[in-house]
Amino acid sequence: MTAAALAAANAYRSLATATAGGSGAAKGAAATGAVPGQSFGSLVQDAMNTVVDSARHADAQTLAAAKGKGDLVDVVTAVAESQTAVQALVGVRDRVISAYQQIMQMPI
Image 1 (spheres, rainbow, N blue to C red):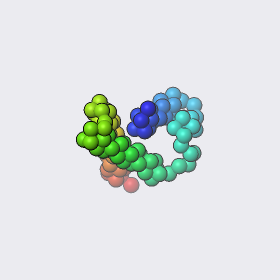
Image 2: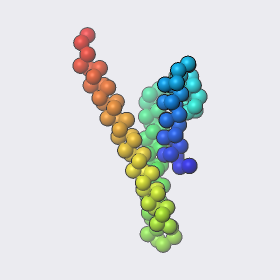
Image 3: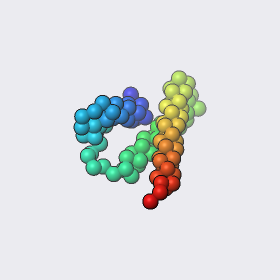
């Protein structure tokens, strides 16, 4: 399983645990391996690092294929995983911006 797929699986597991009831925050933190009390900034940084690693892997696969040492299937898979990771990160960014805008529009 690639880093992007692992991050996505952990995020989905965390969401499912949090919405299932009980002590969702503790269960979600345990499921993702997150440290309780971990800052939002560090979570964003981890997500960015995952996307960057995915892009670097795709670049390496593309370079290997250009040199004739790689397989085209590996290149397509790596590029698709990188694209999925970027799309997920952009979706989260859009949701965070939307939430911020809604908070700023609330009356005091």
